[in-house]
Image 1 (cartoon, rainbow, N blue to C red):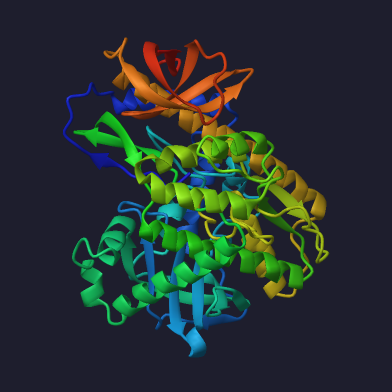
Image 2: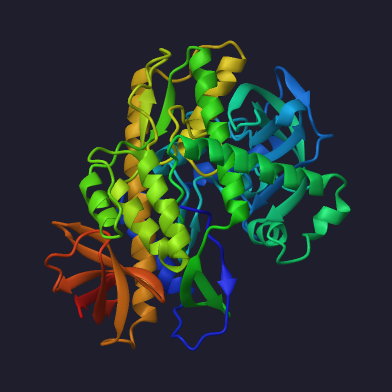
Amino acid sequence: MPKQTWHSANSSSPSMDPTHLHQIAVEAMRSRGLLPVFSPQALQEAEAARHTGPERRGDIRDLRQLTWFSIDNDDTRDLDQLSVAEPLANGAARLLVAIADVDGLVRPGGAVDGHAAANTTSVYTAAGIFPMLPEVLSTDLSSLHENQERLAVVVDMKVAADGTVAGSDIYRALVLNRAKLTYDGVSAWLAGESPPPAQIASVPGLEEQVRLHDVLAGKLRQWRQSRGALNVNTISARPVFRDGLLVDLQPDEKNRAKDLIADLMIATNGATARFLVEKGFPSIRRFLQSPRRWDRIVALAASHGVALPALPDAIALDRFLSARRAADPAGFADLSLAVVKMLGSGEYAAAPAAADGANGLAHFGLAVNDYAHSTAPNRRFPDLVTQRLIKAALAGEASPYSAEQLTEIARHCTLQEDNASKVERQVLKAAGAYLLHDRIGDVFDAIVTGAAAKGTFVRIGSPLLEGRVVRGFEGLDVGDTTRVRLVGVDAEKSFIDFERA
């Protein structure tokens, strides 16, 4: 899930006490086996890092002079990565991505590491963020803040004119963030819809950097799409607050700057996976298998007059999606949601050290075969594990994890990621139930997001949330559009119930 953004707005909707919503989130965390608070030992250990700092032994390059910058949400404080680029001959470019050296501050086997290994992810709820690491680390000491020197692991890539990553290297370095830019500000500027962010004028060379990044991201994306990467446009719910009270749930959509960063991170994660293979190290991979519900995707395409192959074909699917985006831009988000639901969720798996050990661990949606999460060690445990593997390889040491340990870590991370998603949905539904408590009987346009033995679920658009169809669900399947009537809500139990209208 994207990092949570917080907004305020004027609204006549009912509001909910954030303290009450936070307690619902805490109880949801505990019921799913997630730790909502840090132990005193973990907090003490994190605070002690202020005095000890990260270890600086070994080969560390000084790259503080480069024009590093970040792009993230307006209020994000746990900055995991920076980037900088330079043009090369024949349309190629050099792209450097610096990843926060979180391992240097989180001792393996310590109390902070234990909490991170238990939860495996930060949990972003409508009641607030439950970080994987104490904030003294994630939003301070290990965050790549503007104008702060930081240690980082740098993935140094050569991107060819056709968007292929022609070569890469990884090393440790000292970096300095010259500008913290925002998704909305950069996206609107690149689209010609607003003036440039203030830092563009104040930081020499920054405008050229951002424009080069935009071009590079486009080349990387185009190369992946030629191999079948899916160009979808999913949206998530954004809590809207007024005077500290939740008043609405509105769509938080993708934009040009978010796509830019996503494309750079996909390339970085691929380079990381290949580096560990070259060093003879096992790794944790992120993969998405061929869709089990391809028959439903075929039926969905057929309803739009398009015939897809009988067997999963990412290139054919992306061609269909691109055509629908052009034909019906307004409806593309709902179509994307349907396809994403049918594709299923990604998983983590351990890949052995052998070069061919990751066979079968390709990512269907991204059209990449080598993919190891590495770019967000402040908020994802697999990324922290990957960073430890990289640093051990750089130091000429043995792998800090056995293949059996990585297998168990991957299994647990997949489980806890699913639990975190369930908590996020539960808290969102609790908030939505309160927002809808005076709208019983209203009818909404909806799209079916789940159809299984446990129930049939739909998503409505205003407020943006999911609920269960308790009557008239027979015959509904994922991707279907329908109209539903609100028949009941319960904020305490996170119930939002509809009947087919």
